[in-house]
Structure formats: structure tokens, C-alpha cells
Length: 373
Ligand code: TYM
Image 1 (cartoon, rainbow, N blue to C red):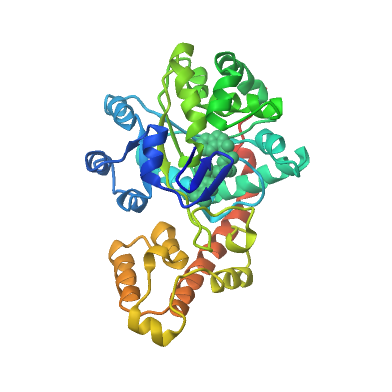
Image 2: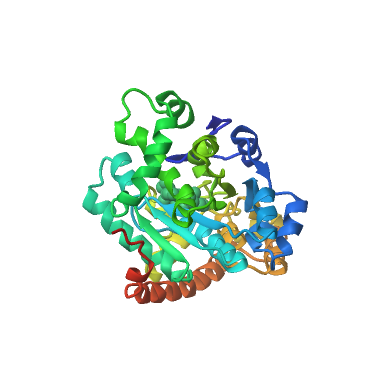
């Protein structure tokens, strides 16, 4: 979708995103106070919900109505293994973990190694498969329950996915993919077909359980176009439409709207060392005044500051503390250097712990992988 000064598609997010306009253009629903209070009745609300970071949805009320009547839903999310995992990818996965814990829901996690081979000129099939197993360590490190979590690697599980993808593909025309994804006659034919592979896991739980299973897809709002296609064909194939819950995009350190692997200097990867991390945060955009003296007088602008946004989006779950940080910044009581140090210290601890869990995950990979006979 292109609008105002921004573009949001599953493969490109640029500019300053107007999230309200996205709701309107994509035709999703805002997560309103009523839904928030309903969600709070299942367990403590996640900070991403309280703060409007997870902000949009499709058919959540329907899904919860079925859940209340005793029908368990499955979760489905994924990753296109284009390189190392960054903090932006972790955001919807951390939220997915909260959903799994709160609703005891099984999770199907798709690794689209085929997608990244098709869409990225510089990646070989060996590269995307290597990235797949590397990224899977990050997923496992977040603590998903191995008994109810399956990672689907597209090229390894294609025998399971293909019959479902075919059903979808038969219902989707080239003209739909052009309209939804902006493809044209020069797009390779694998890319045109690909959305049917990303649809398949939405119907997989129903196939495996041999009755219709509701599915909830937590993801960044950039992935929604795929699932508009999935939802459009679902009922004609005899399945439920998947419900969705969308997050905003985690910003890059330059203050841009989306952290993205293509700009490594402003992206924090889960594999970064403490030294790399300190350097990146040291160079982060804060929007602070030219001198400390000036800033003490005029105060800072937390709403544009990448360092503040990181605390707000992911790292400070205490609302009172995050509010007080913003307040002290506005009053010029805390300066950018101190804020950067607070964030670096916190992130070094987070990454050390995450990297330790990634190491442990190496011996658990096999338990999480979906097997195909
Ligand atoms: P990918 O690898 O681009 O992204 C994986 C997940 O991370 C989200 N994401 C972000 N969220 C917040 N801030 C960011 N800066 C940021 N960058 C990425 C994405 O929205 C996504 O949820 N084709 C997909 C893989 C996939 C998938 C799925 C994703 C397959 N099936 C089902 C979600 C749901 C992809 O390339 O994602």
C-alpha cells in the first residue's frame, strides 16, 4: 500500500507510516477499549496491547467467542530467513509467546526459505536454508513450549504444504496478485505463486485435526496483504478465515519507522556483540538539542527519539517508569548520553541472556521441527 509519504508491503516498508491510514486502507479494525478489556479477562494485558503497539486486528471477537465456547484456536506466524534476526522480528514473536501462554494455543511457525530465495537476488538456496536454522534458534530461545510448537521449513515440509497451496493458488488470479502486491509482467513466476505457500499454514491445523480449527495470526502489519488473499479464498475452500492481530513496526536506530536488515548500522541483531551494540546505540538518533546546556533548557523530544522508543516498544514494561523517563526527558532532567547508557546496559543484559538461550536451543532444534514422512 502506498499512501502519504510511506509504503507498506510485505517486502518493503519505507517512510513515515500513518498507522491510522493503514487501518483504513487495509480494512482492518482498531483494537478498541472493549476488546482490550475482554483480552484482560484472560490474563494480564501485554504492554504492547496497553501501549497500542499491537493495535489492529481482524475477527478477534469471533475468535474469542469460539474460544469461550470451548473451541481452542491455533497460532500461526513466521519468518522470511533473509539474514540474522533483529529486534523488530522478535517483537511479534514475543507477543506470540504471550498469546501461547495466555491461551495455551499450539503454534505453527513458518520459515519461508523459498520466499527469500525467490525475492532476493543475492541469496542462494543454501543461504536461505542456513538462515532458517539460525533464525529458528531465536524463536526457540524465546521459550515457546516444544510440546505445542512446530516450525515448518517450507522446502522441507513442501509435501505437507503443497496440496493446500495448490487449492489456494487455483482461486487466486494474476490480476489479484498484481493489485495486492504490485507485481507486474516482469515478476518471476515463483514470487507470483508464493502467497499461496504463505496461506497454507492457516489451513494446516484444520487438515491435521480433520475438522475446522480457528487460527490466529499475530504479525507485523506489513504482512497483512498476504492474509487478505488467504481470507478471501478461505470459505470457498471450506475453511474458517484466519483471524489476525497486527503490530506496528519496531523502529530503526535512525528514528526511521522500521528496523530493517538492509541497514545494518541502525539495526540491532540478536547476534551483535556488546561492543557493536554500544557503538550502534551511541550513534542513535535522539532528536536532542545541539548542546547539553541547550537541552537542559528546552528539554528533549521522546516522541522522535529512537532510544526512548526502544524502551517504550520492548524494554521497559513498567508503564510508570516509561512515563517518568519521557517526563524527565521533556523537562531536560535526563540527557541523551544518560538515556543511551541506560538502554545499552539493559540491552547488553538482554542480548547476553538471549545468546545463551540461543546456544541451548541448538540441542532442541530437532524437537521443534515439523517432520514430514
Ligand atoms: P519477515 O521475516 O519479514 O518478518 C518476520 C515477522 O517480523 C515482523 N517484522 C517486524 N515487526 C516489527 N518491526 C519490524 N521492524 C519488523 N520487521 C519484521 C513481520 O511483520 C513478521 O511478522 N513472509 C514473512 C514470513 C511469514 C510470516 C507468516 C510472517 C510466513 N508466514 C505468518 C507472519 C505471519 C516474512 O518475510 O516475515
